[in-house]
Length: 200
Image 1 (cartoon, rainbow, N blue to C red):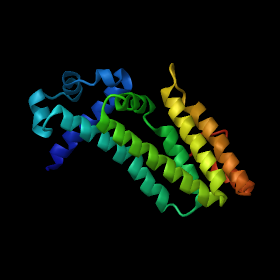
Image 2 (image 1 turned 180 degrees about the horizontal axis):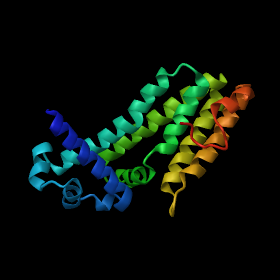
Image 3 (image 1 turned 90 degrees about the vertical axis):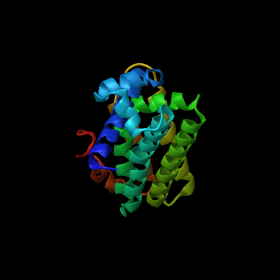
């Protein structure tokens, strides 16, 4: 595959996620996708075998870029408090509207449902492991990780305007509980500055 072809495929994936975020699963159609990428349907079929091929690659790309890469980064971070901070920041920065649409989509497409289940499992597992390393208490870690997971899913499924700053605020409450459980109150000020929001 040439570099030009890879760039075009990437543009299709970006456009697909934008459509999901703006118009939901029902808005994801070939004509709208090609219009957004500014290519013909012939170009689309040059890069993908079928519409199903595209949609499967789209959700697999979402899993790889928005979950597996983050999992790798988190597991490479040796400092437990920094690992939790990294996961928190990535959780806040997720494309929440698009993810909400993918979850709706998973209700009608078994392949998407399998990818969604994998994403949920990977995110919950890496969060639990990070919190276990921080707290040394598997029960506390499991409870806090599950609370963070439910908070994220609920935030994405909520109707109306979603403010990521509110999601961050509640996730930081759970982060502070984890740090307190670890007996690491002195690390809280290093882990985040409540006045500045996300760290650079």
